[in-house]
Every structure is written in structure tokens, then in C-alpha cells.
Length: 321
Ligand SMILES: [Zn+2]
Image (cartoon, rainbow, N blue to C red; front, side, top):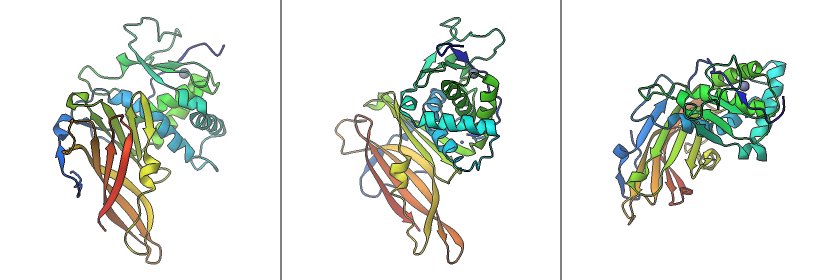
């Protein structure tokens, strides 16, 4: 098989998860959360509001999730992979973290509109994605298979991540679909968390963008926050995490999760939608190693996204500790 051969993948059957407003103190804000889609995925939460686009966005987030989850499996194999999967996982992680990994893009194509595009094998069913054996290739996703007729996602968040693990595995040179399905479903099952998806629609002014928040407990209780705009996804987790500090004396930061997110727009803005604030609560876990007790603090996060949909500022204010 040459590196230019397209490979398809099968629908994974992994059982998976993926799944009250902040008070910005200083600046007056005008909320328009009614015009914003907020979708909860996985965790049995179902879909809130209009789910359109959520699965595509999960593909855009997936490389960051894979970096995080597989990154927790090295060194020492705490994920307890079998030897074969361990080696494959190591190659996929190296690809995600390489310059070729940065080049990987998701191209959404309707199989009905492009008959034959996803048909590369006589006995393959449910073709959802395909790519090549070359690192950095696009991953083509069949949009006909992402949603039910009522608009509900057909794939869980973990299944999306598992599919991307499978396709990236091909890009490391592995042609075996079965081996990649096994690894994909193992990674999918490691994803115990809640995922929230916030979409700012351009009808409100300025250009559209999306924000994904996934509260993860593995390898640490640190969420993944991804901004997708201008066809580019950016991982904002480190920027936010570096600013979180436990306030109570003699306690150490253990981890946190993001809840209660919503968008607002500063009223000082002459043009609606040019600058957008994302507000949320951080539930911060702190540990007192002398008393051996754990406590929780609530901090308020405010992140301002500028007209180019880059993050302009991040502030975190402890509000209960
Ligand atoms: Zn495959």
C-alpha cells in the first residue's frame, strides 16, 4: 500500500462520555446569552439548544484532547496499554506534537454529494473519515454520518476523539484499521468528563467563533479550553491555568473545573460584537497538606476575545474562598 492510498475507518462502538452565570465585578456588561448556542455534550446531558456544528467542533478540538490524554500515558504507561498500543500511542502523540501535526486539518465533505469519495474498500461500512499514511495530511470527514435526522449528534465526544486517534494512527504509517480501532476506543473510554460548547454567531456583529470547555479529571483535574476561529483552533488551557492560585493560607492548588459559562458584550463597545467577553466560574480544588483537608474555592473568569477573535485579556478574580 502506498502512502497516497486513502484509508477509511469504521464507526467505533466505544461507550463514552464526553458532558448560573458569573458576575464580572468591574465593567458593565450586556448579556445576550439568549442569542448564543450553548450545547452540553455527553455525560448523559443531552443537547441544550441548537446542536448544529457541535460534532464538527469536536473534531477541531480533538488534537488538543489527544495531546492531553495520551500525554498522561507517558512515561511509565500509567494507562496500562498493551505493548502494541503503547508504541502506537507514542507515535500518535509525537505526531500531534510535531509540526506535521499542526498541519492536520479537518475537511468536511458530504459523501452523498461526492459519490465514491468515502468508498475505498468492499467490506467497510459506516465510513466516517479517511486520510492517508502521510503525516500532516487532511482528515476528510463524511458529514452525512454526523447527525440524526432530528439534528442530534450521532457520535459521542469520545467517539469523535477515538476516530481521530484512528486517522492519526494511519498518518504514523500504521495501515491496520483493527489495531487502530482498539486504540481509538481505549482512548475514548479514558475521556470521563463534561464538555460544553459555546458558539458566538455572527448575526450579533463581528465574526463567529466557538469555544469548547471540557472538564477532564485525567491525567489531572484541569479542563481543556479551546477557541476555534478563522479555521484555527487554539488551546487556551495553559494561559488560564497559570493564573489560578489558591487563596486560603497554606493550601496548594490541586485542580479546577469551569462551570456556568456565558458570553457578554461590554456596553462601552460602539459596535456590537467587536469585542466579546466569556465569563465563567472556576471551581478550584485546594489541598491543605498539614491538615490533610481539601477545600473548594470559587473564582470568576473573564476572557475577552478581540475583533480578530484572538484572546485579548484574561482575568481571574477569587470570589469565594
Ligand atoms: Zn482505518
